[in-house]
Amino acid sequence: MNNNDYCIIMAGGIGSRFWPMSRTKKPKQFLDILGTGKTFIRQTFERFARIIPVQNFLVVTGEIYKELVLKEIPELNESQVLCEPMRRNTAPCIVYATCKLLKINPQARVVVTPSDHFIFNENKFLEVMLNGLAYAGDNNALVTVGLKPSRPETGYGYIQVEKEDAPECQDSVCKVKTFTEKPDIETARIFFKSGEFYWNSGIFIWSLDAIRKALARHLPDVTEIFAAGNDYYNTDREESFIFDAYSQCKSISIDYGLMEKAENVYVFAADFGWSDVGTWNSLYIQMSKDENSNALKSSNVYLSEVSNSMIDSANPNKLLVVKGLENYLIVDTEDVLMICPRNDEESIKQTVSDVLADKGKDFI
Image (tube, rainbow, N blue to C red; front, side, top):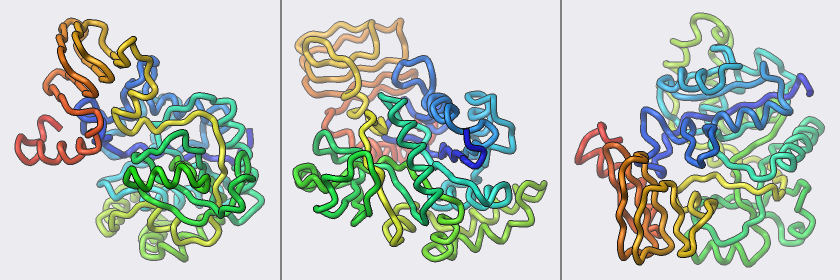
C-alpha cells in the first residue's frame, strides 16, 4: 500500500429513491438491501481497505449518522468521520475533506467515492483504482470513472468523449468532452448508440494539488469559506467553524460546480460490473428472477398472474398475497406499504416530498 493514497467516502445522502426502506434515520448506505450480510458502506470500506491504509480513510456524513458510521466501520477513529451539520450536496463535502487532508498530507493522492455502490468484479475495480491513482499522481488531472453502458438508462449521468477517442478509451484515460445529467429515454438511446458516452460512476481520483488548484479557480467562494478554517481543523474549534461554514455554503454538486467547467478533466473508462443501485428498478435488474421474471426479496409470498414485478417485505412472518399485476413494485415495511408501477419509480422522490407535506416526517 502507498501511504500517500487516501479514500474519501461520501455517506451523507438519504437515499430517497429507495424509500420506504431507506429512511432519514437509517438511509440506504446503512442497509443490506442486496442481502449480502453487509451494508453498502461496510462493503465500500472493505473494498478500498485492500489498497488504502485504514488510517487514510475519511468518511463525510451527516451529524446524525456519525454513530452509524462508527458502528459499521469500527476500524475508524472519531477524527476520521467528518460530520456535516446540514446537507449541501457534494461540492462542500469534498472541499471540507480536501481542506482536512491538506493539513494532514499535502502529497496525497485521493479517491472520492459514494458509499452505496455495488461492484461485481472487485479485483478489476481495484486495478482501475490503482491505475487511476498512479495517473493522478503523475498528471495535473481530475479523473472520473466511467462505465460502458449496457443499455439506455435514464437513472445515470453520462460522460462524453470525442468520437475519434472512443474506440481507444476502454481501460485507459481519455479527455472528457461533456457531462450530461440523467437524460430522458430518447436521449439515452442516442447516447447508447453513439458509442461516445459512458455512465458516470460518481467516483473521482486526483492529487490534492490538482483538486486544490481546480477548486480555487472554479469554486472560489466555497473554497474560501472552508480555507478560512485552516487554523481550526483538528482542534476543538473545528465543529463550531464547520457549522458556520455550511451555513454560508450554497447547495451545489461537484459535477456542476467543478467537473463541467475544468479543462483538465479525464475519464478512466472501464468495465468491472457496476451499479449505483440508486433505484428499486436498478436493484430489480441485479436480482435473480423466478420463471415469471419476478424478483422476490421475501420468501413468504403467494403470487397469481404476477410477472416482471419486484416484491420486498421487511416482515418474514407476514404473508403477501398478490394477484394480477405486471411490472409493479411492492415494498412493505413496518409502517409503510408502497405499490407503484415499476416504470414509474423515478416519481418516488416526488412521492416522498408529497408524503412529508401531507403526513409529516414520521413516515420519512
